[in-house]
Image (tube, rainbow, N blue to C red):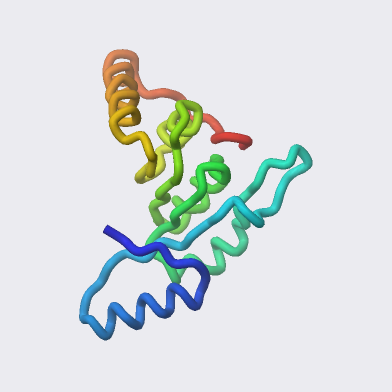
Length: 138
C-alpha cells in the first residue's frame, strides 16, 4: 500500500493529510519518462540530481520502466528507497526489472508476469542468480 505523488507540493499535501488523519502510508515520488532528459539515441533518463535533492520527501519512487537502468537503481539504493516500476508488459522490461532487483513491478499482465517470474525463480534456484545487467536503454 502506498501513495504516488508528483512533485514537492503533492508530497507535502499527502504528508499533511496523513498527519491530520493520524496515519502513515508510504509516499512514492513519480518519475515519468515523458519530459525526461534524453541521450543522443533518444532514450529517456531520470534526473538523478533531482532524485537526490528530493530523497527526504519520499519513501521510494514509482518509475516508468523506460527510465529503468543501473544508475537509477543505484541512486535508489544509495538512499535506501525502493523502486516500483511501471508498466512492465513485455518480457524484456520484466527481465530488466528482475535483473536490477527492483522492489515491485506493475503490469497489465499479472498472470503472465507471475508465470514468467516463477520460471526465472526456478532457473535461479537451479543455476544460481542471474548477473545484474543494465535496464532498457541503460
